[in-house]
Image (cartoon, rainbow over all chains, first blue to last red; front, side):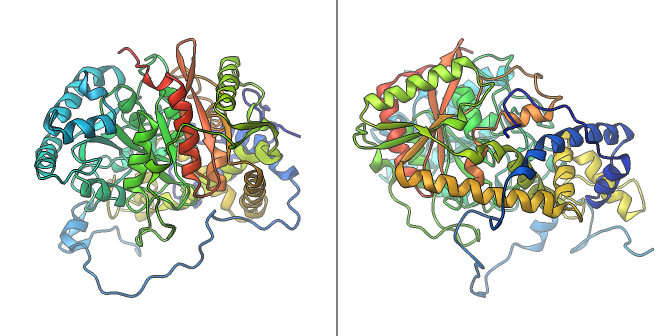
Length: 108
Length: 485
C-alpha cells in the first residue's frame, strides 16, 4: 500500500513521549530547549508515522545492505609515512595546552 | 563574447590559442561575482587573491605548453570539501572558524591540473536539506526567480554555475544534493557511482551514500571534470579500484539501438503537470534520436525508498556527527565546568534545526529496541531497491526520470514542514540507496522555471549516461538559456 506520495501524507496518530525524546537527546549528547523538545516530539512522531509503511514490506530472507560496492575488509599496507605536524592539527583546537588538547575534567 | 559565460572546453581552446588569459577569465568571474552575489548569495567564501595567483601560474603553464583541459579555468567548491588554509564551514556554526590543514583528494586533483579556485559555495548545513535554507549563514536564491529556492544541498554550487559566477563547480550528493539543484537551476549535475570519486576530505554526512560530482554548463564539461576527479584513492577505503576511462570519448550524438527504460513509479501522484509534460516530450525526443524506449518499466520498491533513505541517512549522520564535541576543532561551549554540559551545549548551539532533527531521528532508529524495526528493516529494503535496479539494467542501458516532481518552490514554503522538504528528493534518493551513477540535465521550463531530466545507469555506467545526455543536449537548446539577473 503506497502511503508516501508526493504532496499528501498522514497526520500523526502515534506519538513519541516527552521522555522518549529526552532519552534520545541524551544518547546523542544533544542539549535541547523546552521548545525544541516539544517541536521535535511533534515532528519526529509525524515522520515516523509516515515511515510506518516500511514495516509492511516483506523482507523475509532478504539480507541487509550496508553499502553498495562489492568491497570488503579493505586493508592497507603498514607503511611508515609522514603525518601532519602537531602544530597544524592543534591550530583548530578551541583550547590547547602546549602540544595537547585541553579538555574538561572527566573524573571529578 | 561574455567570457565568464564560457564553458570549460570553449575557454580551454581560447587559452591554448593565447586569445584569452587565465587572469582575464578569472577577473571576469570575480567581476560577475561582485555584481550577482548581492542578489543570489551563492558563496560563503571568495578567494580572489589566491585565485589570481593561481591564474598567473596557470598562464605560465599554458605559455610552456603544459595545458590540461582544466588549467587556468575558475572553479567553485562546495564548502564541505577541505581546502588547505581556506575556511571549510559546511555552512554550519559548528565549523564557522575551521581551517583545514589538508586538501580533499578532489581539490588536490584540481590543483594538480592547474585549476583556479575562486570560492567556496553555500549549502544546507552539513549537506542536510534540499533548498539551502538550512545554511546557518544565509539562503541562496534561484537566479531564475529570486523568490524561489535553488534546491540543495549544493545550491550555492548550482547557482554559481547558473549565474556564470564560475565556469564550473563541485558539489556532493547524498540523496540528490547535486542533481536536484542542477535541475532547479538548469545546469548539468552528475552524481557518479558510489566509489568512483574519492571522498577523502569531504566532510562526512552519510558515508554509504555520499559522493562528489561536477556541476557544469554542458555535458562535455561534465566529462572533462569527471576525468579529472574520478579514480582510485587509497585514502578512501570505499574508493573502487576500477580503471577510469576517458569520459569525453563517449560523447556521440547517435542513440540507435540504445535501450531506455522509463520507470512508471517515478511519475508520482502530486507531480506537477509541467514537469510531466516536459518529461514526456524529452523522452520522445530521445526516441527520435534512435533510442528504443520502454515506458512500462516497474520498480515497485520505489514507494519505500524515501522512508528507507530517511532512516539510513540520518542514522549514519548521527554516528558521523558524534565527532563534534568541541575538543579538537569547531565551535566549543566553555562556560561551564562540567564535561557533559559542555558537550551537550556545544552541540545545542553549534548545530541548526535540521541537523538536530536528523541526529535525533538517526539516534532513535539505531537505539536499543528500535534498531531491528527501523535501521535493519531499512537496510533490507535497500537490498530490494538495488535488486530491482539490477534487474532493470539487464534489459535497459539507462533509465530516465524527472529529477524532481516540481519546479523550484518558494523560499519558506517547506521550511516548517520537514516531511514535505524530504519529499522533494523522492526521485533522486533511490539512486544513492543503490549506489548508482545519475545525471540531471536541463530538459525544459514550466512558467519560466527550470525542469531537469534524470538519467540513471548501472554501477560504473557513467559513459552510457553521458552518451544519452550528450545526444539530447545536441538536439536541444535548453542548456544555452541564461537566467536574467
